[in-house]
Length: 168
Image (cartoon, rainbow, N blue to C red; front, top):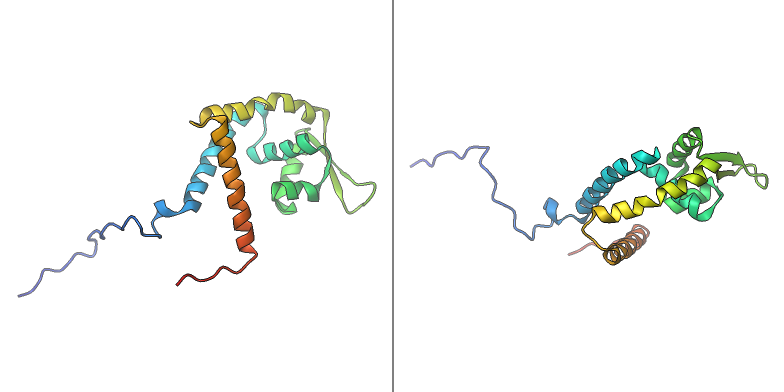
């Protein structure tokens, strides 16, 4: 008695809910999906300001800290100069920042807000409120989530710098 051949396209058995290789079990995917959703929302909100989300982050640092060397700005944003330089060029072309060689150290380039860049801050004050209102979270929940994400980032940074043990 021959058994009928199983078609190659037969559906696989559904994975167990505890299968660690399921997409819905991956925190990295959830974080990436949330990041992409935020990016889409910021794109809509920042359109009125004429800047992109990465440019908004640069402006936030400059509004908070004032003039900074490119290197220090990159440290705040966790960006290397190769990623930061094109952002700064576009912000400079838009008249929001100026880049100038440091008078103290010619190897260093300082980033300064222009009057227009400083004035944009007032218009940007509505951005965080619009972001909060687009979520189902209250301010305390958002603060808690941000703190948890900061803890996660610190833990992941530490893990990158230490060898993780193999699980047996």
